[in-house]
Image 1 (cartoon, rainbow, N blue to C red):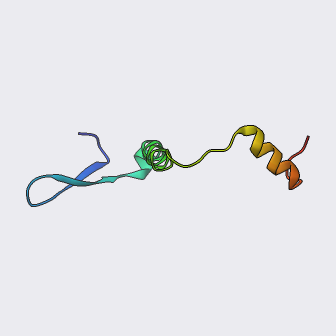
Image 2 (tube, rainbow, N blue to C red):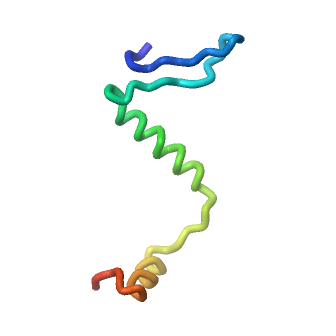
Image 3 (cartoon, rainbow, N blue to C red):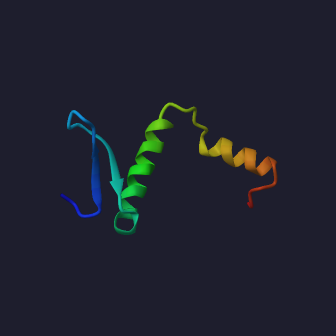
Length: 64
């Protein structure tokens, strides 16, 4: 087992949650959090880079 990682076990002995010592594993947590957010947003509509640039330029929020 990794130090700084603890599992919460239910009455049936199943792992139901995890506790992460962020002082030791903040990078691990950030990677996990980013992955979860990416999966949650996987089906969201996307804009092309050109359309984003055009919109920002129209709002005078883009140099060049």
